Length: 303
Image 1: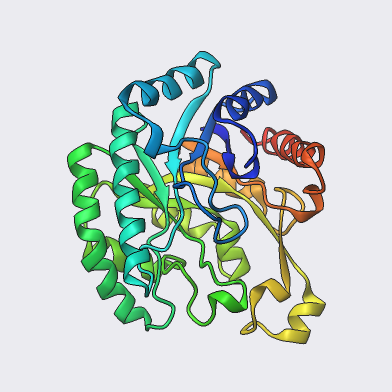
Image 2: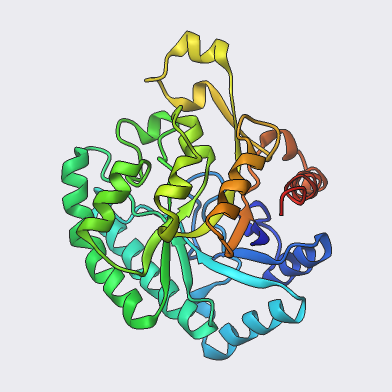
């Protein structure tokens, strides 16, 4: 298992600065954010460490070679939009850019893209599964042609009023994953699994490691702190942002020793990247890097 960093937490750094810093800390890999240039739609989004619109084959090779010269692998090219957005134009933009990531990932020899399947939050789960099958079948077939794997993160993207009522990512529970894999069967479609998301839903976050061991393509390490008094006040069916906070690994409720032990049980040998999201460590760049390095030291106990 290779310990890495999700680059989103360093939005103002260049690709080279991110890689140099990751190497200095001791990370073995980086999940590199590749959003198209434009206004960010939410926190930790809209980050462009590789601009595919400005990258020809020579530039893509440069990114790969630069990382490898520092002893760092690119674990995946990352982009987390809503490919099932109710807005057809937004949906098409997301789909086109995911295809660009697939093509670039192939050319760079990364062969991994991490993303969301999305969700039309105004429609039912069943309607969204039908839409998923329609939209994602050609994307997955293209990934198969390119020899690239797609790791779907299991984040519900349902935290605030703006994401109510259904959230912006359907792939948040085992039932949905089974339906995804049944409707679009492919060795190239799997999970970018983050234990904090089922923890937020008061669900078992260890069991999926065993149940979906052949579908775990990539890992995120992030923690969640649930505030019982706020959960009591607002209830579980309120906006989750009212009663929880994302935290550095080790500062929330996820048992990372047990989680990594489960990954070892299934002989997971892939990439596992720390996704740093903690407002207590975002006052300035020094705070951010302090949080990154604290997370690194904590996870190195297990990896």
